[in-house]
Length: 69
Image (cartoon, rainbow, N blue to C red; front, side):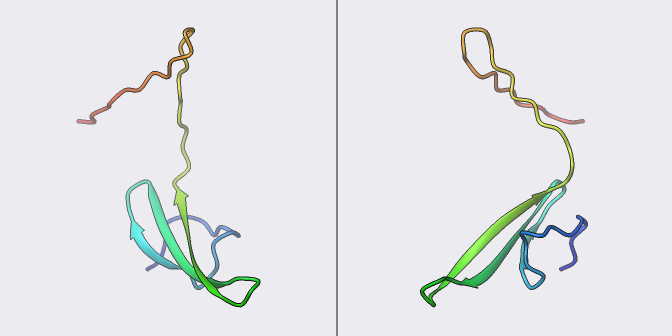
């Protein structure tokens, strides 16, 4: 599956895209560990954007739910 995002050096060329969404893709691949065993790795690639986490004066984090028309 071809990704709509640019190449990322931490995601191997042979990684499998297991999910492709509007804002992100998730890739998985098998990798040989130092002891010779195999492990499954996963990385998410987000579309460029900005996220804001507001912290209130009383140290609480403000969480909101947004709904787009």
